[in-house]
Amino acid sequence: MQVLESGPADAPPLLLLHGGGVAGWMWQPLLERLGNRVRAIVPDLPGHGGSASTDYASHEGAADALERVLEERAPGGATVLGFSLGAQLAVLLTARRPELVTDAVVVSAQAKSIAMPQVTLAMLAAAAPLAKWRRFARLQAKELFVPDELLADYLEGSAAISRATLVASVGENLRFRVPEGWARAPEAADAPPTALVVVGSEERAVMRDSATVLHGSRAGSELLRVDGVGHGLPLQQPGLLALILEQRLAARDGGSGPAHPLG
Image 1 (spheres, helix red, strand yellow):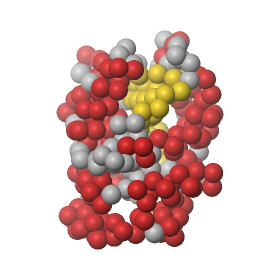
Image 2 (tube, rainbow, N blue to C red; image 1 turned 30 degrees about the horizontal axis):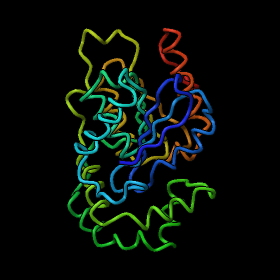
Image 3 (cartoon, helix red, strand yellow; image 1 turned 180 degrees about the horizontal axis):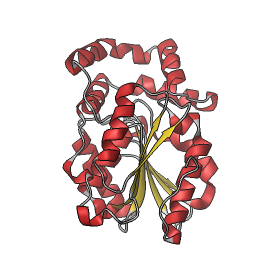
């Protein structure tokens, strides 16, 4: 799995987990705004970007690889920020290895089932060749709020994603449920929140409901609904996401509870 790292060695570590169908490049607008305030650890998940030669197989397999990344690069723990598929992996990492996750920021994670997922997957498998069609890929890029300066990265990555990766990653996404370890122990409920669940007000109902479920199942977590945002906060409003992260990092350093700019 390709992993790129940037930022000062002594800055707080931040593991960034991209969504399905994109790659680590999606975090560039956010990192430009964060500057040298973090040490960014940015993997390309299996089947995506620089890791496209190995198909995505399962969330469990991806989490295994990400645990090794944290053990090697941030053994004392890191803030883990994930979007969409990457947000599900952030939840899974937090549940499996809480000692490696000092804070989880979970953006647009689906955690509720949809009707007839098998039908959705069958349609996806049949439509997989469309991902290599530039006109279709451009339409998808617009849905994800990919800016013009990153469009070439999206088109190149979309053409490289295999049918196996597409079906496996979406299948895992549709089947994802809140893992047992996500819930914090009752005695830890008064500790500073170690998770922020974020969802856009313009996302599908299943995404908004999933955010409520994730928040409700983890004691001490926070829930943030961002007005006017769809399924693409990191690219639609990277400045806002940078501000959220900065305030959470500052709050942890200062010993007070995390804060965010929307109340």
